[in-house]
Length: 262
Image 1 (tube, helix red, strand yellow):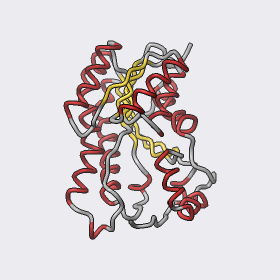
Image 2: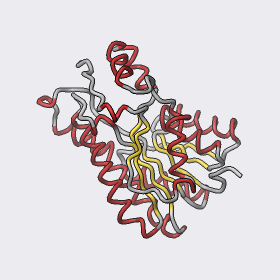
Image 3: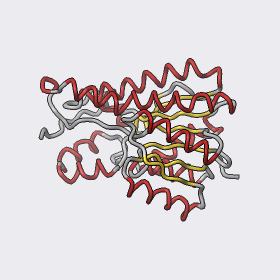
Image 4: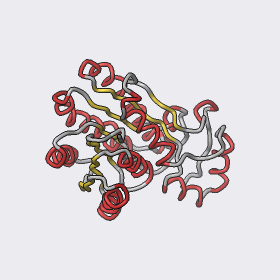
């Protein structure tokens, strides 16, 4: 039997990259999916892809995570469609472009917090009563090696992603009594954003790979989706409050690179 048969999952930012990879991994194992995505074209395409390729019950719900009402709506629509929500994956993010710390504005930091920990909190709070009523659930939040290794020129993004880690650990402790398990994944993946970066700054991309013990970026579905699948299934039923480094060992080296400034 598929490991997520009868389960319903929400994946934010699932129109491409890691979000799409996680959604595909879940659909392959029998989950019903809500694709919460701001881009109508990619969101709808992924939902149809899951239906056609895996026969998965999948719906696209247009979602701007900067708007609390839309975050609440994605949960409400999921309950209406599938009558439950077992898994929440907070993958979407919004942040300002690179800039030196002395030039980062307060608005940049506020955007990163709205685009990271704030919408993550809203989504977690929105699924909480449903998961309690069901007897449990799984929440998977995406964080970043940028914050852990203090990468340069993205201080707002780094701080926001570390705030998501703090939320994850706090929720894991407070909600364990409800059998709601909360974990984070720090990935290194060949997403469209990474591919675009590698095309613009090939020397920087090569430098990053040289510091990766496995010498490659992860596949969003196989490598990152596989870890999310573990955390979402019974295999991960005694795991909570962790940050899983799905990064080919990059965290061991404390990868440091200097991206080009605009």
